[in-house]
Every structure is written in C-alpha cells, then in structure tokens.
Length: 203
Image (cartoon, rainbow, N blue to C red; front, top):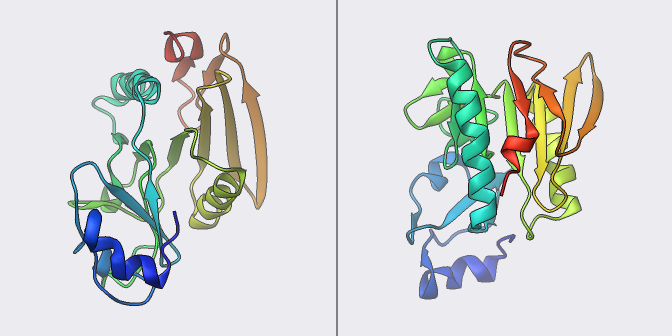
C-alpha cells in the first residue's frame, strides 16, 4: 500500500501514529513511527508500503529455510536474519537514506554491515516468500532494487506453486534459475549448502 498525503494525515485515526508530513520519508522518520503490534512497513525511495501479515504457510516455509541456513552458517562469518529485520540498502550514517526493506531472510557476511538496528548496506543474499498480496509490479521493483544495491543472490519463493526462482547478479548481468518442489538447490554463494526444497515445502 502506498501512502498518499491524505492517508498520512488520517492514518493515526485507526491504525497507529505516523508523522504528518509529505510522502517522502527517510530512515530517520521510519525509526520514529509508532505502529500497532504486528504492523510493518518498508520504505522504497522514500515511499512507505505496508507489509501484509504472513499466513501459516508462509511462516512454515520461512522456518524451514531459516533452520537450514542457520545450521550451515553456525560458527561461520556469515549470519542469516529472518524477518522482521531492517535492511537499509543504501545506508547513510546521518540516517538520510530513504530505503528500508524487510526481506523474509537476509544473509549478511560483512560484519561491518551488521548494526544494532539491522543491516547497513546490501546483504549478500536475500529471500522473499510470496504472499497473495504480492504483485508482479512489486516483485519487479524488488528485483531492480536488490540488483542496484549490490545483493549477490536473490531468491523468490512461491508457496502456491511450490517453486523457487533464483537470481544471480554478476558482471552487470542477471542470471535466472527456476526450481520445483523436488529439486535440491545449491546456494551459489555457499557451494557447500544444499537446500532440499521437498523439506522446505513439506505440509
């Protein structure tokens, strides 16, 4: 959901408290918002978008993926962070950055990017799990956003079709691979990590 000026003015009536101002927000604004329990928003180039509440299927897939990444990365330099976890893709120390996303899983290898509030810069790998509210326009926006920020690998998980699309960003090129529910995926940035999708999509 995109905020209009009218929406920003009326938002505090029913859902929470946001500052009354124009529709362009920075991280400095974002961190001051007082939201109702369970509400989450992302900022993309200064515009705020509501994140829908995940359903049980979404959370089951998130848990299955998170556990496999956690087990593999234990005692290694890289760390996996499940949502909610703020990722400030274009980090600015003065908090003027205008893009904050909350992917379902963010893998961060550079210790300098791991701040107390979240990730300061592009994660190495991002995983998004689709929900009924996701649109093709939104996913295309995210693809371009992660590529521009410098994410190395981007996964889009489709719970409805039990499928996975993996995007690799290399040398100004986008390489795409698709997988089905019976496939095993080798994580490109971690060649020793093989994700069995049958376990991920198990009911």
